Length: 86
Image 1 (spheres, rainbow, N blue to C red):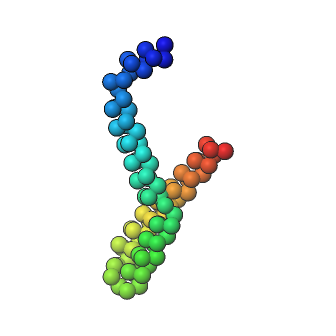
Image 2: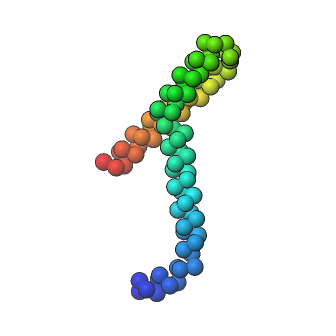
Image 3: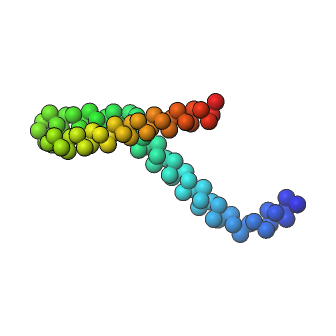
């Protein structure tokens, strides 16, 4: 049965390969988006730009809120992953 199933589903192998690659790319993009170290660096850069007067209050607050939201989501995802893994 395994050989027959393998032969019947063989034409789907490229589709499964593309789906696997897309899934891995999405995972990596998510990891980068919610990386705590990266977000911390971006917050520090934002603070420096604000202190130098390069950005105003509105831009600072909007971007800081976005970064803090990403940080919170990233921590939630990490908790969920650790709950699933152990």
